Image (cartoon, rainbow, N blue to C red):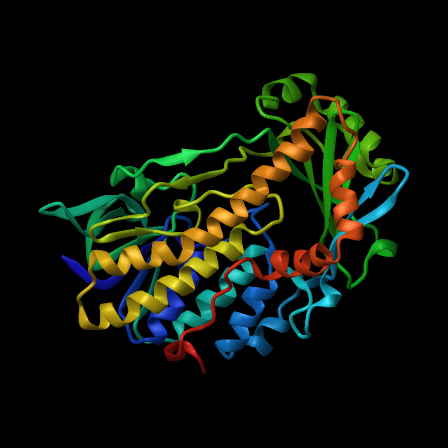
Length: 408
C-alpha cells in the first residue's frame, strides 16, 4: 500500500497552499484532486491582501505579480439618492497591501501547484478522486481513491486533511455534521462582454438593486462576471420563465449593459450557486482534519472564502509540520489548528449573517431597495468603522504569517 506523510484531499486554494507549505518543511505530502485540471468557471477569484502578504513572505511575490490580474482598490455600492457609498477604501491601508487582486482561480492554483512541484517531497495527483477513509482501530490512517482508469487504491498517511469543499466526501465519511445557518438567497453566475472602450487596469465590484432583485458585476479583462441574486428556491421559477425574461431582468437592473444581454444564449449559460453558510461543530477526528469549506462553507458576501481557507492552511502547516516530521501527529495537534481558526471563522460568519438579515431579507421581501439607512450612516460617519472595515475585508480578523520553515 502506498504511503505519505500527509494526504491532502482537494486541490483548491487551501489544499494546494497546505501542500506547498508542508513540502517546504520537508514533509512528504500528497495532494489528490479529482478533476483533470483547475479550469472551472465562477470560482472565487479574489486574492486578498492577507494572501498577497503571505505570498511575499514565501518569496513568490515577483512571480505572483507577473500573473494577469487587476486591482480592486475599493468596494462601493450605489444607493438611490445617495450616490456611491464606500464599504471599504483600501487606499487607507499601508502599501503594498492596499488592494485586492482579482485573477482567475485557475491561474492562481496553477501558480501554487507549479511552485509546490519544485519541492522534492510534494506530489500532486490529478484525476484521483477520494472515495472513503482508511481506518485502523477507529483512527483515520489514510484515504481510498479512484484513478482515471477506474482502479481503486489506498494511500496510508500519518494524517489526512480534507480540503474537498462544502460537499466534502471525507467529512461525511467521518460522521462530521455541520451546523447550517439560514441563507436568504442563491446566486446565478454568467458572463457579459466587456467592450474595448470599457477596459482598464482598475477592477471593480458594482452592485445593483431594483425592487426585489439584486445583481453584482465583477470586472474581468474582457468580460463582466455577473451574479444575479434571488431568494432561495427560485431556480425552478427562473428557468421556467425562459431566457428572454432573464435578459429583461438583467437589462432592467443594469440598463448600461442592456445592449449585450443577447450574449446570454440560453439558460444553460447560468451557473447556479446554492449558497450555503455552515460550520462544523468539530473539525477533526483522530487522524483527520477538515479545513476551508470542508470545515466552514462561507457566503459569497465579501468574497472572503478563499482567503479564510488559505489562512486555515497556514495555521495547519505551522502546527502540523513539526509533528509530521516526528511522525507523531496527535489529536491535540488537530485540535490546536481548529482552536486557532474557529474564532476568525465565527467572526466572519457572524458579519455575513448580520448582512444577510439587514440587507437581503428586507430586499427580497420588497421592504427596502438597497442597504438600510442606518448601515449607510455608520459606514459614512463613524470613523472607527471607516478605518477598520477596509482592514477587516482585506486581512480578516486573524491573518496568518508564513512559518519560518516555508520562507525563501
